[in-house]
Structure formats: C-alpha cells, structure tokens
Length: 436
Image: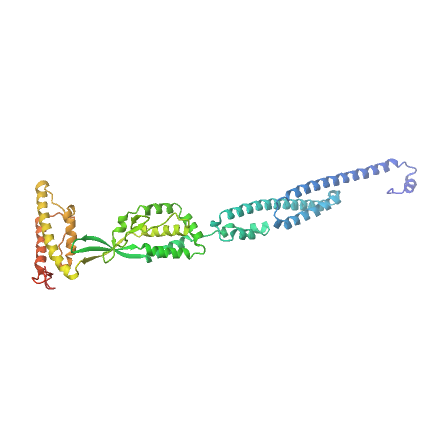
C-alpha cells in the first residue's frame, strides 16, 4: 500500500508518474528482507556449528558436572534464539544486541571450559583410584572406596574444597616422632645389668658391672608396641619402607656382631648372660633376629631390636670382687696374692734395671704383661690394703727403684697382716684398725 494516496499527490502536483518511486521502495524492502534472511541464516549456521562442537565436547564429561554445564548451555541457547529471531536487532537496538551477544559468548565459553575441566578431572580421578588400588599398603583400609565416594561432587566443588585429596587417605603407619619417642622409652626400660671379668684365678674374680640392652626385654616390648597398632603388618611394612637404607645397614651391622661380644657378659653368679644355643646345628650366643621373614611384623621387630642392641653400648658401672670360697677364700687369696704380687714386682725391678742398662729408659707398667696382671691383683687386694695405703700404681708413669721399693714394702705389710692358723690352715686378717 502506498504511503501517501495518489489522489492527494495529483491534487498538489498534477498528474505524476510514480512507478519509479514505488519500484525503489519495493527494491529497498526486498533488499532489507534479503539481508535479514542472510543474517538469520548466518546466525543459524553459527548456532548449529557451535551446538555440534558443544555436543561433541560432552563426551567424557563427569555425570556430576552435567547440571552446571547444562545451565550454561541453556543460557547460551536462550541468547542465541533471541538473536536468530531478531536478525535486524543490531540496527534496531545495538545495545540489546551487544548484551545478548556477550551473554551468548560468555555462557558458551563457560560450558565448553567446564566440559574440558570435567574431562581432565575424570582422568585424574581414574588414575588416582587405580594407584590407590594397586598400592594398598600406602593407604588406610577401604581407601579406594572412600576416595571414590569423596569424588561424587561437581568438579567446581572439588577444586574449591579439595575434598578428593588422596593424601588425606594416606596410611601414616607409626609416625616418625611416635616411633622415636616410644622406642627410646622401650630401650631405656630394657636396660639390664651384666658383668665383664677383668681378672680371674683359682681364688676369685674381679668384674666390672655394665648396663646393656636386654634382647629378651627388647623383643617383648617392641613386639607389644608394634602389635598395638591398628594394622600391625601394614604398620611394619610402612615402617620398613620409611627406614629405607638404614633397614639394610642395620641388618648387616647386626650380622657382623661377633660372638665374643655376647660371650663376655656374665651374671652375678658367674654364669653366662647369653648361654650358648644350638640353632639349626650351629652353636651361638647371639640372639636370633630374622630380617627376611614372610611377615613384616617380625622383620620390623628385628630391625628395632637390633637398633636397640647396637645403640645400647655397654655403660661401665662399679667394680665387684668375688671370691670362690667367700670370706675364707678372700683371706686365703689375700695372702697368696700379696706374695704373688711381691714376686712380680721383684721381676719388674729386674726388667727395669736391664732396660736402664740397655737403653737408659725406665719401663712403664703398661708396657709389661706383668704390669697388666699386677694392676688386677692390686685391685683384688684393695680391701686389705685399705684406703690409707693405696699402692699408687700408675700404668703410664716411668718406674724407678724407689717407686718399686715403696710398692714392695706395702705388699710385705699385707703379707705380715695375714696370718695362717695351724689348726685350719686358713688365712685370717689382722685387726680392723691395723694400718699398712
């Protein structure tokens, strides 16, 4: 329909040919319609292209993420529908067009972005779950299922809260600090006393008391501690793994401990602290520790016990003198030992004089085997000699005749102090207030 009636135009301007005017208007509308159609086709093409990309991108997305991704997809679709239904919106309302176009791009990129993150998270979850299943000793019981349960939430929530952190399900075993604290207590509580002989003859023995680790107490206490864990075998497996190279080196060091180390220790009555055992046809005093058992509870126990034995080096304590015949044996021994010591000092005097003649250098008791024996004898005589008349033997000082004469003189007084009764033949000491 013409915009202005033809009769009005004729009245105003006279007869006029308006065919060209109408043709131009018709051409304009046809062109506008063609442009709108082309714009709509372009928008539809873009929409379906993006839709195909979106649908393809959903393969491998986690089920838990579909609601969030779908929400972005719906907002993108709504904006796209408005743009396709209004192909001339850019000319009519540029502001609304810009808002819808921005909304469309934002929501589409959000949907695609979350899809990609979801697929990456799915792959990570699958790999972590497989690792937990194949390394059960590293994780708590039921860790595999508990981990899968922790992932049943949208990826956005997991990234925010880190609820699916597999480290939370790691099996700590025996914590390093707890292990150190508890084993130190165990080692201290397992200390026992044993004696090492320093000098022995037919009359008696001089021994020094030592504090050592008691293997039996160690095995009992360490075993109780390990079996107090929630899962002893798993705790031991992790403990061995945490020990690393020290586990092997401790095993090797313990295997090298000589039998003589255990043979030297005695009980107060003189019996062996570690008597010989027959193990698979082999005699041994060393406590048997198994580092290669099929059970790591036994292996880890052996490791901790060996650490206690190796680390508990003997700590020297007081000295003990024990006579074979008690008080009677002590008196007999004093007389015999004083005479023996006296003869030994005479021998040392001769050796010293010969040394002076040959080299001009005085001997030291520590350089002579007799000197070492004499040192033990004098200690046995300490009860008779008394604190006021010590024999003043220093193993490192040079000897001279004056020093030797002084020692021999004191030994003679010891001999004089001990009398033998004709009836019993037993040596008896003098009065308590006798001085040397």
